[in-house]
Amino acid sequence: MDGTLSVTVFKQPDLTFMTYDLKSLKLPRLGNRALNSAVTLLESPYTRRLLEPLIVRETGLERLRKLELSEPPCFAPIAAPGRAPAPASAAASLKVLEQLPEADNNPQASIADFARAYRQGLMTPTEVAEQVIEAIAASNAGAQPLHAVIASMDQDIRRQAQESQARFESGKPLGLLDGVPVAVKDELDCIPYTTTAGTAIYGQDGSAEADATVVSRLRAQGAIVIGKTNMHEIGIGVTGSNIHYGHARNPHQPGHYTGGSSSGSAAAVAAGICPLALAADGGGSVRIPAALCGVPGLKPTYGRVSEHGAFPLCWSVAHIGPIGTCVDDVAIAYSIMAGLDPLDPNTLQQPPLHLSDYLNAKLDGVRIGIYNPWFSHASRPLVQNAQLAIEHLKQMGAEVVDIEVPELECQRIAHAVTISSEMLTAVLKEYREQASSFAADTRMALAIANYFNNVDYLKSQRMRQRAINLYKEIFQSVDIILTPSTGILAPRIRARDDESCEASMATLTDLMRFCFPANLAGLPALTLPSGYSDEDLPTGVQLMAAHWQEHLLLRVGRALENHMERRQPRVHYRILKGT
Image 1 (cartoon, one colour):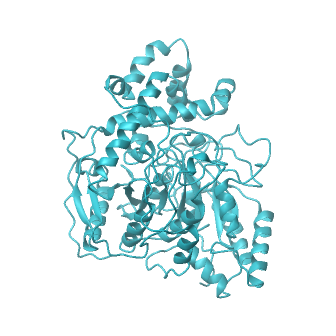
Image 2 (cartoon, one colour):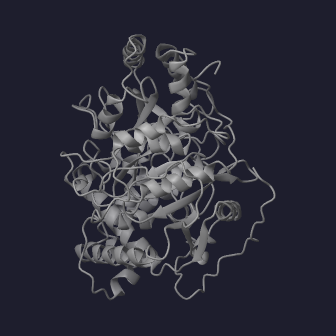
Image 3 (cartoon, rainbow, N blue to C red):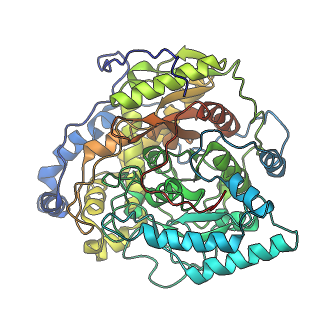
């Protein structure tokens, strides 16, 4: 990394700034015993009336209830397609990606590395399959198991690999992903696995009946599905804690969480088990674990990628996206996954998919928006590394523009009400009939959601429309809003064992500080590694753009990542031997 760049001195956030209203919560962490006591009180009809004023105050709901809104409710952030800047297609995008040069600073084996190894005869898909099977077993063993891949079938992996190898031997590989190992978050249907959504309740009736659309599209390119990855139960938390399948551990520091909810997907990629994993994002669940594990991840525009075959958890804020070893991996997966799907009506209004100017690292004319009070409201290494990213972007020709993003606190509350209300609705029957089958931290979140009412939900949808209008105006003056990806580094795992729970509303809001606007307004956002802390924990930087501007995010992300430091995690498996 170029050490000659000047970096702005870190400043503590000015929380008295006129329009900046996000606060750091001071609520205590609840360990297993305290958490169970809190759940009992929250779920009891006898204490509900006493606790309701406290819940309204501590969640910030009181502020949203007092807010005057003239906007009509928006129940899903589906944006008008507009005009695509370049007539292109997914096939044309993939053609660009097939000629990629090798990345200079990626310590992991990328999709392109697998493709080259197969085409040059350095390894075969069946040899790779054996390495993957061994890596999954090793990763789940020992005193600090990663708990990244929670379900895999050796026989099925070998079968797929043999079919892939036969295609290569006949000179007819299906595509760029042929023979490439890919993991799937346990929120997406994938034959022959069950879909548990991270619970001990769902998926007990056998294999999914069909692949989710995104899974079938990857298979059509020859991908080898290696199994299902761990997740925070029903995606309602962002640490990666899970008492049913074990807490997911960070490959860089196994004593720390991966982030969530797509915890296992990020950990599997970072640990080298696979170069690509499917994830899902309702409030940062692609970006947070990717950032904390030191890999890139993309949350596309709402309606860009089909949700068909995803467990229905949070309809109006849900997005499926890829996590990869580098931006090229993410771009390849995005080009395959995205596009119209008759099985998901929300995808039918999108503009043509393209990667216009993807390989152009000259960023002249690209305007980067910085809202300094928000940007600076994070731990020191996160802010400093994000500042370094800005200096690199400026050297490549980008222009930095000061902006303001008002009403972030009301956006946060509206997103929290929306996602938690939808999740409660999704699991309401099971929660009422067998609440004890959920983890205590999940029950606490669902119990709090039960305090919200229909007026709160409708007002949140009106706030969503206001947020969409706000970002539409901001993106008239800038092309990208840049922030750190999270407000804090990967939290330490303080639960005494995999059967113990913990919960912290302060940690949750710190990790989500920069993520929720993209979900509420349906905007695309990309996280990529920005460096490391003194404790060797990864930091991430987030790029957020207007609807349908994934091509711009990926182009800028690719140009930037070549200047950022990358380290191989402490826990790492080398699947491509001798390459």
